[in-house]
Length: 286
Image (tube, rainbow, N blue to C red):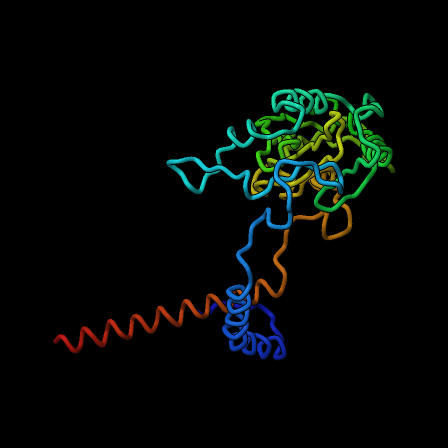
């Protein structure tokens, strides 16, 4: 059966036909531009190796600092790269700092923990400075609403490309037994289980946090927040999602659904052609 596009209008069908014809041409143009450009390297914009960038005291690693495992040339030798780094704080000490930070509540943070140009960034929210981040963490009354909450942090690791950065994963779980947010959402008794998310802390050479990232979902099929991370996911899980797209589960765009439909048509066309060729070969052999 043919792939269904639901209630497509005549104009949308015409557009789909045009896109079918245009995509190969666009693909050729993109390939030509890529082949004419220089080889891309994630470190090519940096002219230094293992030094502090002037922009935000962020450690950047040049191409000369890359090392790979002998048996697995597509795998970087993270241990060697971290060992060769000249960032003054040892990787183990950064891990300890990160563990201490993530086991504190926002009320326990102090000014000395953060640099003057600190910023928080999430997939949607941010940038926020320290004061804005504290206000965002306290205005919902999360600790009172989820007294048994546990972020379940695990897999603390140093970034060999940014030796002053620590990554950590989280699988948050908690039960909504208290009033939450403003206006208050009464307790629902629902258990919220977030999908695995990745967080990170970036430090300067004085051990202060210059960047905090949170809410980046690794697998949106896990948990009961609809694949939404951070506080948006918690609100979705207890039945009070915020009324904008970024706070709701992922939904494919019309353009993507259209492309998927066209791909299905092409697969069916190739399948039918292969069947005809197989039938023809069978008749010829008899």
